[in-house]
Amino acid sequence: MSLKTFETLQVERDGRVTRLWLNRPAVRNAFNAVMVRELRKALEDVRRDDEVRVVVLSGRGSSFCSGADLNWMREIISFTYEQNLGETMELAEALHELYSLPKPTVARVNGPAIGGGTGFVSACDIVVASTEARFGLSEVKIGVVPAAISPYVVRRMGESRARQYFLTGERMDGRRALEVGLANIVAEPAGLDAAVEAVVGSLLSSGPEALASAKELLRRVPGMDFGEAKRFTAEMIARLRVSEEAQEGMAAFLEKRKPKWAG
Image 1 (tube, rainbow, N blue to C red):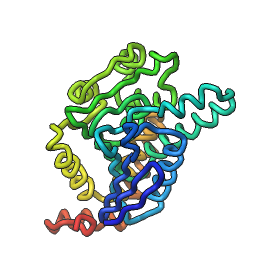
Image 2 (cartoon, rainbow, N blue to C red):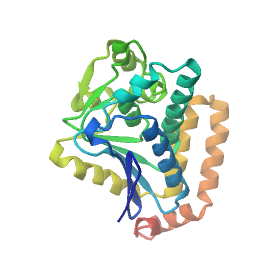
Image 3 (cartoon, rainbow, N blue to C red):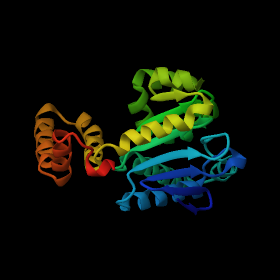
Image 4 (cartoon, rainbow, N blue to C red):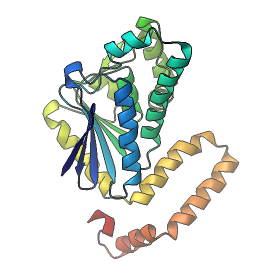
C-alpha cells in the first residue's frame, strides 16, 4: 500500500484499487480551487495507470464534502465574470473527468455531501452512503444554482426529483437518497466499509476492458437515435468478442474457472 499526499488530497494505492481522499477535515472537506486542480491531476494519473482497476472517492474525517470553501467564496464574490468563468470551468472539467473515467468509481459517502459535494457523488458510478450521510442542493438559498454539477445530478436522480431539490434546496439523509436514486446502497456507519468493499470486489471480478466499454455505452447511447445506436452497439460487441479479454472470459466460463483478471 502506498500513500501520496497533495495539499488537499490523499491518494492511497491498495493493489488494484486507488482511494482518493478529500483531505481538509478541519473545514469538513470543503473544496476550493486547489482541491479542484489536485483532483483533476489525481484523476489524470489514475487514467494513465493500467494497474488501477477501481477508484474509491471519500472524505477524511466525518464529512464527505461540505461544498465550496467559505474563504474561497469570499474571494470569488469580488471576481469578474471572466474570473468566475475560469474557476467554474475548472470545476466542470474535474466533474467530467470523474464521470468519464474509463474505470469504475465508487463514492464512499461517510457524512455530509452538500452542493458540489453532491456533484462529486453524482459523477461517480456507484454510490455507497452511510445512514448518517446528508445531501443538499441548497445553492438557491444564497442566490445561485447548482450549475456545474447539474448534468450529473439530473442524470442520476432524474428531472422530477432534481426539480424538487434544485428549487427547494431541502436536505435529505442517506435513506432518502436511496429512494430518489442518488445513492445505490445505504449502510449503517459501522458497516459502510464492508459495503464499499463488497462493491469493489464485484467490480474487480469483471473484465477491465468490458467495464470501460460498459461505461462508454452508458455515456453515449442515451444521446443516440436508434439507427445510430444499432451500428454503434453492434460494432462494440463484435470488437469485444474477438478481444483477448473476452476470449479469456468466455473460455474461463466454459471451463468453469475464474478468468485471469479475477485472480
